[in-house]
Length: 417
Image (cartoon, rainbow, N blue to C red):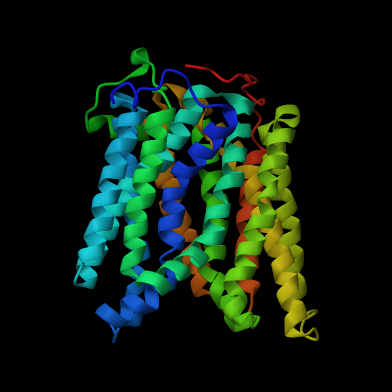
């Protein structure tokens, strides 16, 4: 049994990419799949305060933020396999607690615990990528991971609806248990430890703050941490506003989930395109081109909408204009996700796990700070969302464009450990 869970050879490249995408997907699936369950949760626990049911998403995201700060240093001390085992253990315990929860408060505590554990998926995925690859090769792998990862939020609400129809909202938490154990078993069976003994760091709480200080001292890491936040903030703003825009402003009705899935799936090709281009053109040029293009597109569509140019068009035509713009937004994220992550992590390879945790936690929390005001600004049209995206793209473009450093790392090797 010990030999079974101690693989001596790494998986093939394609399997590795899909496996790391599966780790990342623990968070995305746990957030998006529960959205169809919110009305049922509200009816059972808070029928007079329906909006409080949305806290099950906030509690989970909050847990992931704190979880990344802990799992990162743990991963740099005890290894990627141990960190994922601990994280999935917490994730499964949280899911079981969710099944037996008899109040909203108990469910929120369960979701927070789930989030703590799910953070390991993101930290370990990014750390293994940094252990095995560097520079443009790391950006290429990140883009391929994004290509598979983007499928999950696209189909998660549809899967959630089916599970709820068959087993109620409690059935979702049973699915979380199965998902967590499946991903962990796959990782332990196929992926050897990637953290070399000489790179392990003694685990102590103070190391978290040391890592935060090191990230803050790195001008490169800070620059691209802000860029990551702006890019992720645009995506979060879109996800937060999407249902209102599609259903209330553009009359999509029950087809909202299908339109959302279509946009995400079509845009997933951007990761494949970036994986090919980044090896020849470099990370920074591609990221600046993507943000600059989105600035022009979002700014132009917002200006036309604000000027009333689209007012004479049918609601159906307006819907398809919005869908077309949505594809460009998701496509842009596919062209920037892997590149910006690699640029932020490049000077922090010696503390890859902890740095991944700090960068992930800060970018997630600050992205929510962008998404909330954009979502609250909804005025019955897509204009606030488009304006928010244009502003974020403008700042991100300026930060990438003014980076005078060269495209730093050129290594494109797969470091087989």
